[in-house]
Length: 341
Image (cartoon, rainbow, N blue to C red; front, side, top):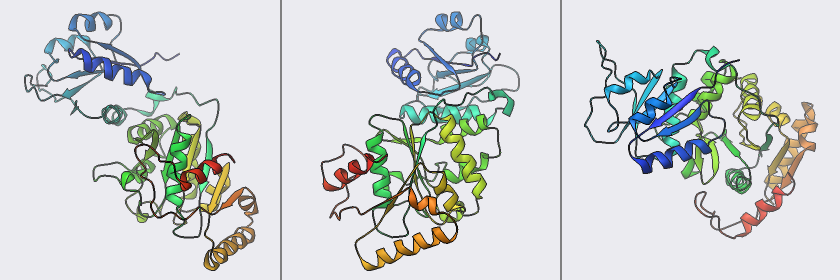
């Protein structure tokens, strides 16, 4: 039986330690048990019987005496004090990983997970458990353009996230939601797929280091362009979705799909529910008819049968994806569709 892994947060700043410790304790499916303390004496007492796997400490709280804790990894939170040279005291000094202290807690956790996962062997985390209930996979896909597909997907995710853990994944060629556009340094969905050949537990850690949150809705930043994901195979997409649905503790995973990905029909077949959005014009109706014909021709009639065809109302202004959701006709429409899940 493998021992539990431990992350210890040590900072003499009591307010920061309390808030960050509370955040970490509230996070589900972390690879460590969490402990926190605000004095070096308490730290050494806490670690007296068992060295932590990771010690996270601030620049101003670090001292060479912390080497006696014998943590496998020390991560420094840079607080701008400049009071300590954060190097190991042993000959041939090695620099500890340093991350910014005063940033959103989720960004700090993401950075710690990235540091931790970069140095793991696959056997180190092979004892992760699978969720007893698989997440429901909700696909949103339509051959009709400009029918609010991304808006619908994100708003549905945010509404479901009020009472459940929800993940949103965009497979669009270019992200159309301003709040979800990745920064240049962000790791994206295409980066995650580099680890699909790793053990499920290693993949899971990489996944968690990339997840971001928008007003309660988890998401992995979309690939910067369609060429980044167009070469990923059907089997790789299916493996990724199976792992996320079984390992990560989500109730719903919403897929904002595009025909640019390989195996789109097989991915749709995996979904528990599919939303096919349309518009009330001749071109849209013709596209939907051709889509149904293609599904039938390639023996994917089951995809059509579990698809809900719906027409969002026209709105002059799409609500913001962040902050409070206003009362409006489009929000009411999405709420009505949620009742079919």
